[in-house]
Amino acid sequence: MDGLKAAVSDCRRRLNESIQLKLSLVLSVAILLVGVVAGIFSFRSALHEAHKLQDSILYQIAGVMQRQSVSGAQVLRLHGHGDDAFIIVWPLGVGGQAVRIDEKEHGKDEKDSKGGKDGMLPLPADIATGRSTVTLGDEAYRVLVRRNAMGQRIAVAQETGFRDKIAIASARRTVTPFLILVPILITLVVLLVRSLLRPIAALSVEIDQRTERDLHPVAAQRLPTELRPFAVAINRLLARVARSMEDQRRFVADAAHELRSPMTALSLQAERLAQADMPARAVERLSELRLGIERARNLLNQLLALARAQSPAVRATSPVSVESVYRRVLEDLMPLAETKHIDVGVQSLQDAHLRVSELDLVTLVKNLVDNAIRYTPPYGRVDLSVDVQARAAVLRVTDTGPGIPEGERERVFDSFYRTLGSDQVGSGLGLAIVKTIVERLGADMHLEFADPVKRTGLSVSVSFPLA
Image (cartoon, rainbow, N blue to C red):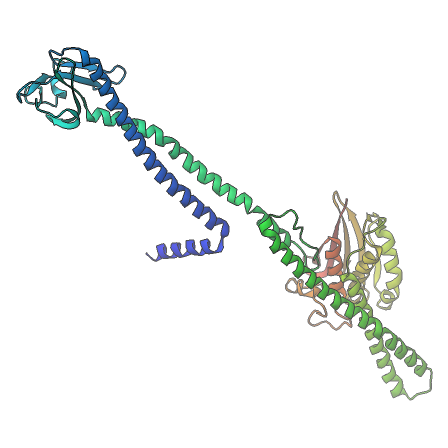
């Protein structure tokens, strides 16, 4: 009982949640009800018409006997309808005497006889003129009584059982198309409803597959008229979100840009102050101040890089060589690597040409290599490589550092997040910038251990689709 209640409750919930299911069910029930009513009406109408046709046969036979004198009972068989298809014609007696017909003599066996004990079929002589249904023996008959030209009353009768069987067969043939077409029509309605609601499903899939920065308007022209107001409302919301994100990006970029000048001035003043004669303790404090200023400058540069990465992508005019980007990044970061005695180099001899923004690709690779150098212990190793496959070029940066635990690989892309237990100095924006650029360029990124057995080191793979 509880299971039945749960099933009913689940069906109601699904009906309330799904327009497609509700519309299909309502239309199917409506079609079914109309089909049942139409079938019943057609069945009764066909049955009535069949009875009228059978009555007309009795009238025709009575008309044939109009100018004939009927001396005895006659059995007229209807060919093609079996042994039970016969019509009885006989004269009626005078003075209320009953007339008997021997069914055996007129084609009916004793075992099939529905008359009296001797197989005779009685008919009252005083039966009223016209059509009537009377019971003769154990069987009901449809009887037509008319007076011929000689003044003789004759009766033309047929078993109602046979009449009804023929009429029902005719009515069934009339109703059969309804029985076939109603299920077909219900199936077509369900398919049509699903097809007509497909634009809604396609719209939801299109919006669901977008990234958080893909805010271009929905194409409302190809949608049905009823869905266009919904698409227009979505486009207005997307426009408001895009303006809000643009304002936020512009604020970050402007703030970082405005802060660069004071930080540069502070850096210059610290350098001038370092040239003056100061006590050892003051020199130590000044050194810490200069390090803090340098960290702040790096943070501002990272904020500017993040703001640029969040701006709309610029279509590349020509392919960019990955090898040249690697060479440019290594030239910039080699002093940092030499400070920690880290071996940095390009491992593969292959080159790939990507149709992306060169500035984006340089920023992406530079942040990956900078992150690898900072987290790799002294005398470690950082390798860069590119692997050209059938449909993609895979850029890979591998280091011999501690790696990133699997549980933190999603959070390391958040802004200002840093791995727990790390003593490295950084802004926490490097991988966030990388993720933003990867999503904007339509690439895929994957993190894994450089040494899966020891679970150490980090290997970052960025896959760019090739045209």
